[in-house]
Image (cartoon, rainbow, N blue to C red):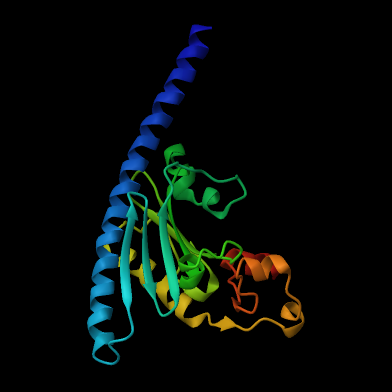
Length: 225
């Protein structure tokens, strides 16, 4: 009995310590990401002001776990999840030799980037969709794995070699901004909006508003091939 209790204790101790390190690493990464976001927004604002002063690019700090970048009708929401995660055995990360060598490398903090239409948030249009563009995974050694939609056109991510730095964080933000800008708003089909309910009229819902085409993750394309 004592041997089993000791085994349980050692497992919990190692896992808890690992998760605490990962949480701290992820929080530090997220705070660095804020600074990079501010720098990108400042740089783009100066450039766009020379062309059209009416175009607004804005950084918004929401709380310790969220910030936003608003630009060109789009809203990017960056969120750090407070929990540490792992993946099923069939996930591609789990079969990488670097991860298999040390069980602590099976756990990750994660930062997500979502794309919304800015007006969806401004006017509280609760049924408007948002799209997950990318996920930035952080491990206990401050290595990272960046995965995202095919529209991001990300370079190959090698968690064994990729260590978090400003270049990686800038790639994360700039890629999501490019994907958002290039995904235009499409008008709804006429058949979808030819009728309106009293509820929609009373709640002043904009039933004729468009919707983005959406995104697909690279792993989804692999599954379809």
